[in-house]
Length: 516
Image 1 (cartoon, rainbow, N blue to C red):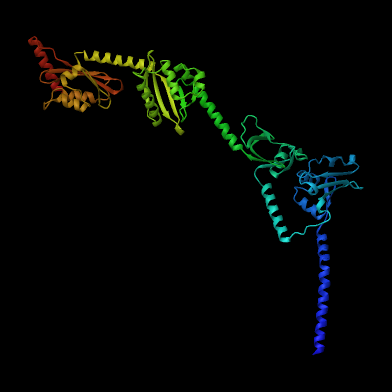
Image 2 (cartoon, one colour; image 1 turned 180 degrees about the vertical axis):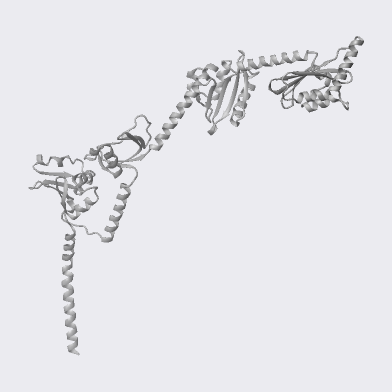
């Protein structure tokens, strides 16, 4: 029993000693592993091409577009103010040291550039506070950060817009693939460092708070972009969104407005368009000629009431009985125009006549059209006077006249006709019924009806028919008029003054009866 206890104690002592030795050596192994993970960031170039690099440097080059010095300069340009010293190493004894633009104190990056004996260029990127110590990062966290960085790079590179980053001096220190592709299409040498500015500002367009219009000249074509700029403490980021469709739409709108303006300028009708606030927005030269309003007054965008007040002072509106009724009329005119139902005739004191039309427009705007219809009114009045004169002449004839159109409708009848047959009917069938009267067989009526129905009647024919009881026998004559019209004239037979005349009239009636 004692032997077993002693043996067990010896085993435990050996195990404790081994654990103590292992625990004492653990920091040294951990430091060794950490030092293995820390490596310098060194690039080696010959003729502008990368020939060798340490793992940290290799990871930086993997994020660049190409494995050459120009691509690395784009990456370095975001962290250092001036890289032109790299091109003058031969004048600086083959060694240059640059200090980064970001960070402060010991956190600022340093770039050591030197030429090797075989003519290669060696670049060493050093962070002072990390020269003698490494940072051990969890592998899963490192992998997640790398995946996120790759995703963000892919999103930026595939963005359908031009993106640039400028330093405080205004120099481009970074650009995405879309910008580089556009620069190469315009000028293959435009991607040489430093990058050239290809976005030319449009001086003809107005500027907004955060955006501006710019264009890119590519070969014989021009591409337009809306540039949005955001400034921070370290520089300026520009996002250029394609705006070709918007520019084409604006150009089409301008051309359409120019066409409308030219059309309005040639119109003989005065045009005045007021917005929803009833301020004058558009007018044409005819409005000045018709109303006498000055161009200076109209270009000041007066209100609708101001325009009408000015027209009243110029005596270019009908003079109202009192001011209140006139203002009420103006209010009614505006309301009627807004509802889409307003046409008014203004008879001016000078003898001129205007037709004022109000029409609604989208958004609450109202358009007023001023049309000089003086000549039209004069012609209408003259025509009406001639019609009245002609009607009076026809009414003064002893013959009874009635005219039918091609479809048998009554066009006109004079006073002698209404005196004999009564009010003029509406159609030929009604007239024939009136002419028949109470006769079972009206002598001469059938021939008159047949004559009115003939389509080839180009001349005239005549006959007799019995009229109303107090008129006796009436002679009729059918005359063909242009357009298929027919005119029927009725004349009263002369009184039989002698037996010979009476006998002749009886013979004529008998003849017409036989013909019927």
